[in-house]
Image 1: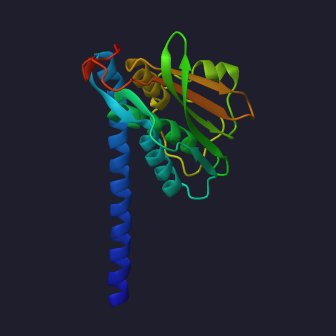
Image 2: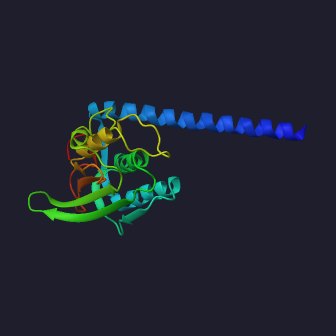
Length: 216
């Protein structure tokens, strides 16, 4: 009798866990579907000094927790400050790492690197590169990687979530809204590297903290 009650309780707990996981997945999917619409309406972004290094380390910690067997190298020591919307930048980092988790084998190594650079025409910039040793993409697929609802064929990870095909489109929209750039480098069998460039603002910048999307 006691064994039967225990088995029923265990089964109920498993059902509840599956229901909770599905609810979480649907919540993330709805949020992904709504994000491009919000950006299309050019909402106000809360532009403030953001330590991108901290966001990158947080994202890397999440990936380690989700896939502890995946080789991961992070070079993001010290503070690297950009002028941006913290919530949006956290989503950029999360989407890029989730894309790897969903579309590459867990054995594929990941490298995350933050550097500061300066150009004559743009001044100081912070460069974030997230690269993997996954299957890579064809040139044709790479041209569409930022298209909404686009999913490349092949690759994949058994641990990866089923996405909406909006993750990379959201990355591009959020980065562009903050005056940054995003590019990809890939080839079949050579992995994928995504590079994000964001303007590093000096302390005491007189521009307002709340900035309409697309303006910096």
